[in-house]
Structures are given as C-alpha cells and as structure tokens.
Image (cartoon, rainbow, N blue to C red; front, side, top):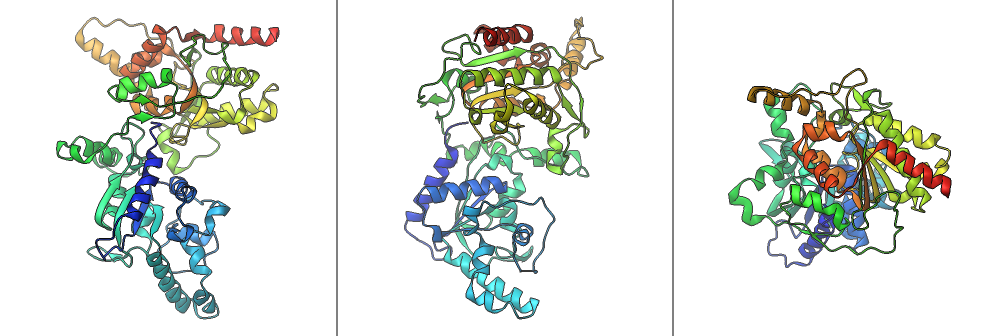
Length: 486
C-alpha cells in the first residue's frame, strides 16, 4: 500500500511505448486493463497527465455504457449492468466517441441499421489499430466484439497486442485475468497487492469450491508458486503513510519489508486526538452494541459487504466518529482531507446521516468522504476514521467463558471468530488502516475484535503498548472539554 503501483504502471507503459518494435504482429500495441470502470478511467487519466499523446490512447467501454452515452450501434451482445458516468474530459478518448465522429459513420446514418452497424464495426477496428494504447476493464477486453469476435474455440481477434498490462489484479477473479491475457503476443504484466481485498463473487448459485476458487486472487496463487518467484517484484518503498501508521501493517502483513519515503508539510499538532507526538494513531474503545441495519441501496456488488443480506450498524460508534470529525475540523483540518471507512453499508449511511445533522459540522459534511472498505480501496486521505461496527448484540451479554479443555478452547475461538463476520478476513483490516497518510482513528470494541482475530489482537496490542487506546467516555469528554475551553 502506498508504494505507487499505478505510477509504476504508467511508467512501464511509457517504457513499452518507447521500446523497439521487434515483432510485427502486435505492432507495439498495448492493452491496459483494470477490474472496474473507475480504475480503468483512473489509469486513462494518469496516462494523459503523464504526457502520453492523446491520439495514442483509446478507451473501450462496454456496449451497455456506450449505448447509455448515445452510441447508435445496435449490434453485438449487450449485458445489462450498472450505468456509469464518463467524465467529460475523458469522453473524447472513448472508442464509441471516435467512431461516431468519423465522417464515414456519419455518412451511413441514413442507411439501414444493418448497414450502419457494419460500417461502425469497420471504423471501430480501424480506430483501435491506429491506437498505441487501448484501455478497458478486464471483462470488456474479452467481451467487446471490436476486440474479440466469435466463440471458443473459433475466436478471431481483429486487433492484436504485444503487451497486456493489468492493474489492481488482486481485485479481479482469475478468469478476468487469464482471458484478456490471451490477447498478448509477447508479455503479460500484472500489478496488484494480494494482501488487500480480493475479487467480489456475487453469484449465489455456484458451488462452494468454485466460489472459493474465484475468490482466491490470481496474484496470491501465482505468488505461492515457487517457480514464479523470479518473475515477481515487490515495491517496498511507500510514499503515503506516516511511519507510525506504516509500522503495524508492515510487520504484520509484509514481513517488515516496507520502507518510508514520506515527506510531510506542516500539519496541526492535534494533541486532542493522539497524545503521542510520534504516533499518529488512536483507538476509541467503544463497547456499544451492534444492531441490524437497513441499507437504502442494495445492489449485487454490495453483497460482499452484507451477511445473509442483512447489513449492520453501531450507533455508539457512529456517535464517536462524528465527534472525531468535529475535533479534526476544530483543529482546522480541511473536510476534504477526512474520510470515514466502515465495512458495512448500513453504518456508512448511519454515519453520513449523523454528519449531515450535526450543527457544528454543518455544510462541511458534504466534503467528508464516507464509504465502505471495498469502495475506498485504492483511495487515500490525510485523516482516516475507521468504524469496525462489530460488537455484542443489544440483547447479548459479553462472553466470559473459560476454556477447561482443548476442545473448549477451539470451540470458544471459533465462536469469537464467527462474531467478527467479514472482519475475519485480514485484508479488511489491512486495507482500512493503510488509507491514512497522516492520522488514523479507529473506533471499535477492542475485546470482541482482539478475541476474534489474531491480526486484530496484534493490532490492538500494538496500540496499547503505545498508549494509543482510549475509552469512548474519556474521548468524548476530552473533545467536549477542549471545545468548551476554546
């Protein structure tokens, strides 16, 4: 995390562009893929910002998105999907925009739909062949009929590529990596972090072993293969996190290999948040119960953030999050520098509603980013506040059982682990705490979290050893007293 993977990818593409063209088949053409449209557009933006000539690059969207944005083409296969808003400054690089603006296509507008579609397909292929870099999602790379025609084993590729570069590869399922990779004639480069959140599998009618296989990141499986170790490179210089924030994920998840190359301009001291001058972490120990929550929006891709189709919230934690936001703003932190992360959609909406109702925060709440761990993976902010939500239920007593036999110990541990739900996945913790650049505030039930996960136990032990844990009552009183004195 924070090692500049996407920056490295952009430099890699630039190097491939300038390399001698030794083969005629792909003509030096590069296909750049990412698992999501947001990630693909981010790469496109970065390539253009790095000085890549605009006419070198073409962005291919799915047929559904193309039609949503006005494409007159009616052929091909269209899968229903979530609509996607293309940023205005990127639209001119889209394949459907370039094809639609072609004089040849415009001359066929009065022809039959069949004739128009044939002309449109010819122009699409020519646009792609004239491009040096093609950017798309992994799925579009093997479903769009301008890139792939026919069905296996009779597949025709109208456009050839020397190199395939796949960003955020750990978030894609293995088929989404392998299928685009078959287009490469020379090399495949995958970039990602298999210690962060993997692919989200939303199909409920698949057998458990197949779901497990799809949920295992391609990078993780390759990394575990000793024959592939020589072909991999780890970026270990991180440019994001304050050293105190970097210390735990480095030791716990990356074998203490992360090194710091971070420079900070002037920041507020914020003694009301973290008392240790050199440790910019705070854990607010919140014993309030969790409860069932309803998410205003329920989509297929959010299924991984919900369990048994029920989302969770923790009102007490939400109250502490709002207090922490107010304390940061009181110290003249910019609202756009603050983000709140939580694993659950219901908690996301609970926090958003409380921020909007808070009189002190007021209109500044609109600039504070609030989202789920999955949604904000890849993002960063100066100050990150994490609400873990998981605690005891409102009608449940704290478990104080003592194991008398090895069997009891195993049963208790399994019960504690189940109480964490999706937080059992160490990647959720890793992603959540590595979004912060300068300050990290965590809100959760330290007892429930530490008993349910060895990673959480190590994290809380690290915080306690540095005196970074404070009870919810003491924290609220502290920020309230400072507000009164001010």
